[in-house]
Amino acid sequence: MLNDMQAKGLLVVISGFSGVGKGTVIQMVLDELPTLRFSISCTTRAPRAGEENGVNYYFLSEEEFERKIEEGAFVEYTRTFTNYYGTLKSEIDGPISSGVDILLELNVVGAKNLKKLYPDCVTIFVQPPSLEALKARLIGRGSESPESLERRLREIENESKDIPSYDYVVTNTVARTCADEIVSIIKSEHLRTDRAATQNIFPTED
Image (cartoon, rainbow, N blue to C red; front, side):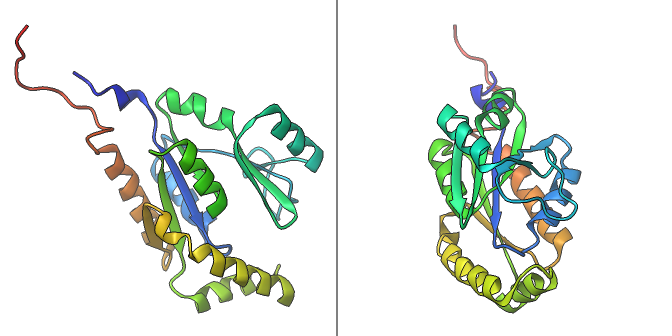
């Protein structure tokens, strides 16, 4: 007989420091696993170059976001500096119950909040090969002032304290290798005895 959990989709959460290259890695993972669906988060921050509403994020005004908070539309939300970030219930509960695997990109606060609500979710932290490499990536983006860079580094130091709470940690030295490791984690999680299809090959007595 089949395990009752077979129909339930896998919930995967990926976090990482700002500038670590999560976006590139996540896109590679999605390309490799076409049945994996990316959960689009809501945010009140302005779109960056190349970002599209409804593709990268749902870009909301602060008033719209707070209205959704009052309506109970979020499974988790947090405020970082001056911007809200949140995950809609509609992006998770329906698809998961239908057997669809969902991938979320969340900061450490969002990941901890989601883990409380969905204890069986798989959490993965993407770290850089070194602090120097991360600084170079942040400076290379060209969007950081000396003040914002210092703020980012303080945030990174605080976030690093939460890495041990994640189920897995991968290092993004080469994006393709990092993505392959995450794909392997997801495939392995599907083979766990509490998730995989199991069948009793021995006859049972009536």
